[in-house]
Image: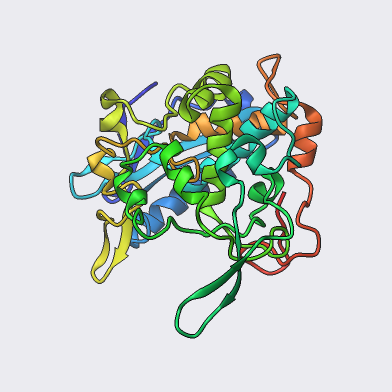
Length: 342
């Protein structure tokens, strides 16, 4: 990949060039090259305004890359420019990889989305649901109408909490337990409502799905992603645990501070980003993936292709159709009005 810096006429405008986009690729995408060039300019405006430290943008249509640019800084304080091959922590965009993995195992008959979670993780047998919260902070528990299912976890309708329980609340920052150990503790938490009765975003639910992937595939969650998704798609820079030789390409995480953008600290998921999750054990299926714009584009294109890439089928067309249909019925779902979940 070309890594030569191109300094534009304006002193504040720094773009690190990706491999030049073939004009034929732009034509194949059915897009206008001049219009596409407005994208990095707009991203740079956001950098100059202090709203972003930097950005990588990739536009792909009909399998053709029409625009691919990097602007700003991967590390503002160190004056380290953003590059097209910069690696990002994509947080909750890890979740689609979990959903895809579950559906791949369903294709193989290793599980059904309708299965009770306890069928694959016996530690969930006997899980209770909160029936009443008392004024003194105590709760009344009861047996749920039915046990939670894989479907419930995938649609955020299980009743599982959003955050880890008291005692391991630091798991999201210090990552000091294995996924198996964490999910065992999650299984002892009471549900917050009857399964299927409400929508509530739950990171723990996605973590549980990651553990089911481990149990049904016979390999660690991160190994399943590597062998079943990353390698077939050529996603060479996608990792749950980032190799040391790629630390230099990681973009820092920023937050809005009183004087503008500042690096997010130890409170960040995974801890301070430039500590590279040193010593981490937890694979964090709900938020743990490192990747690049090019790698993500390969994954998204496979989904758009109906489950195929490079002439090979990774997941069935029927699974893709199921994933992209509304699955939450009339429940109020999502973080905005009039949204639903697949």
